[in-house]
Amino acid sequence: MLRKRRRLPIVVDVCIHDRTRDAPDEPQEMTDTQADHAPPIAENEPRGDLTIRTLAMPADTNANGDIFGGWLLSQMDIGGGIFASKIAKSRTVTVAIDAMNFRKPVYVGDVVSVHANLVRIGKTSITVHLEAWVLRRKDMLSTLVTDGNFTYVSIDEQGHPQVIKQGDPSISV
Image (cartoon, rainbow, N blue to C red; front, top):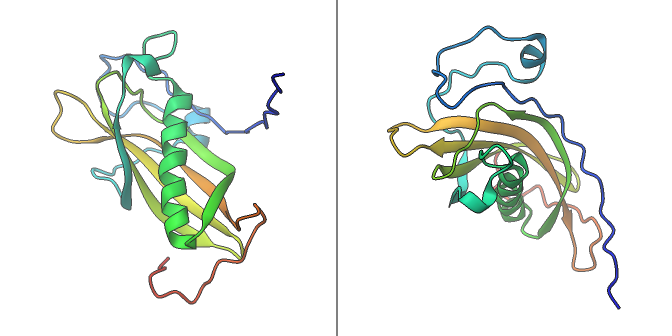
């Protein structure tokens, strides 16, 4: 007998920019929504530790032929989980995703790299700022496509929250 899995809703604040594939990367006038959610970033290179690198494949596309935002969010969550577990020195689970900004589309063939920066460490939780950058086939420089803050909770072997040891010299904010 098959049992149905209970799915928990994930609430994500999403801002998708309306851009075409051939649109230049020149600054454009921002709408009110973009100004609130996705301020322009003048960064030329990723910040933080590289946590995961993968290739966007045709199986990961949405109905428009671009890479599905959920696939990208999943890659970022995996990379952030690796980073959080390394800091907590334990299993971690995702409990929140805040301020997610989908800045530019990802295309089939793009090499996607996720970089992590520690934002804060609480008693049992770790907040990580994640950036997804792509290297397109004909480009020499990476492009920031998505960023957001992910919060993870350190758990013990029974799945209960556990305190993160703060005295570790390898942890730096």
